[in-house]
Image 1 (cartoon, rainbow, N blue to C red):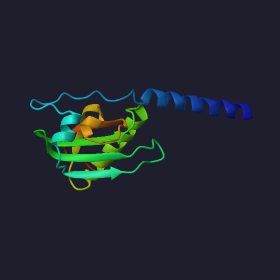
Image 2: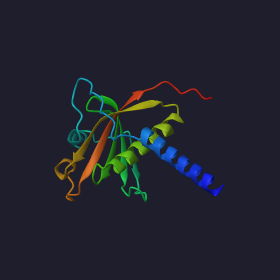
Image 3: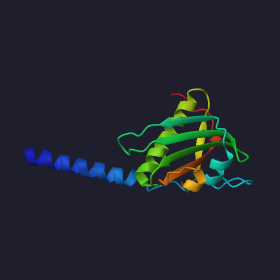
Image 4: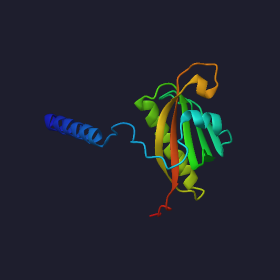
Length: 156
């Protein structure tokens, strides 16, 4: 009886691990193509988009331990609805997944006030100290999203 229960538990664990491995993310999503006009880069956002519509500073959490600055521009470089997530440190898989989670949560927050958007990742770029005019030379990265209006989700 105990051996059968152990075999069943091993089978369930193996099945769970296989399911997780098959449905897990394979890395960063492929960036979308930018529209015609001025190319959006981290350096241009830092130097030319100085009046954000909304800005939120999120303190570091235990995992991954990085703070994130979430910046929404109503218009930036001639493009509407640009969302930027800026964090110190490397562009590791864990850091990027954390940023993706924050962006998803922010879009859920917007939906509660009737704003429905679908994020399109334009690019993830390293921000240098020359770009940000910081004296500290720590590595930082910026994920740049273009928010496209989406239809309201139906409640079930």
